Length: 451
Ligand SMILES: [Zn+2]
Image (tube, protein in one colour):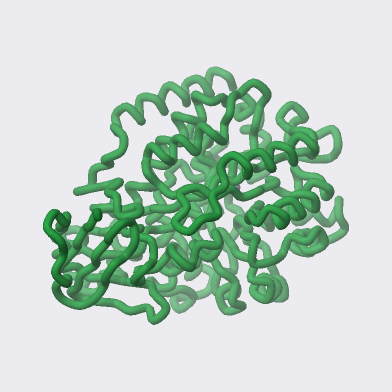
């Protein structure tokens, strides 16, 4: 039996009681949490691995609810653009992705997530050029190699420019081909079992790149197969105007009309919702992937997080693709969520502990994993982040959760996924960062040349 014991640490369990411990222990045994509590750990078998937690904070591993891993190879483009301008500039570049580029970008992006405390990530991949290779298989292998739990979404676009959509016709697919590829992705990769490392979601991309028919038929397929639904929604005013013009309704009304609200759905952004719409999200249990840095980078606006939480909607955090963020470190989004919520709603709009809840148990709920992820409870999966808050950068901050959420940006000290160390003593154990950077540099250069 593989056992890891951490002792002497502060612990924010984010469990049902939100129990916090100033000096305690956590035991991971065979991939799950075996014990968590005050003081020293109960006696463990010989050979248990021991980690000195003094000066450190243990939290659940963070859950990333929205990403486009391939975009790690196209950072720094269209820096002053709105979302639509940015997409129009980048679609022709992305048309040149292939399996080697997706592999390099995904590994670099997943490594950045791991070093920033993320143990479970989703991905929303929606560009599948012909002859580009088996892109979903490539990113799933990348996640296996880096060691993260992974919920990739089979994304799709079927509304090209010639029929009123935003993307060029060259990068959209036929509806029947998309539905066949979606079913194939579920057949090949989806694991519904407890403790799964890979689960598939279905994710037509956005109202302005997808037909109403594809939205409705994808929802039918997902529900017949028991997988979750994801898309972008209400990100910008341009999108709102597009929906009014094409569908005669606001974005959330449109989504409701195609059967897309429910507790098996989570939506990226939800910046432009009115009060009634936030209530509708809560009443239907529809989740939100809040991406504060991306929303800031593109000047999209500030999502009404406090209203969504008050309405009872799960609100997870997402880094979003690194082409609208340039970064991709998940712990940074705690601070960004706090700051952005307070810019619009004042200093009580979101607390440090709420920000940690968004990044953990709310994110797990968005992905349908809150029974076993997003909290440190006995029996939950041993996905654990250990943060070193003992050095000069944090000197004098008595509250470790405030130090993590408000304090200096910090890479994770140790990251366990299913009890296995992905990061240890601040070092990524599953890949060589120098090789990852060199591969990403090459992939990014190929994208620049293609542009
Ligand atoms: Zn996105």
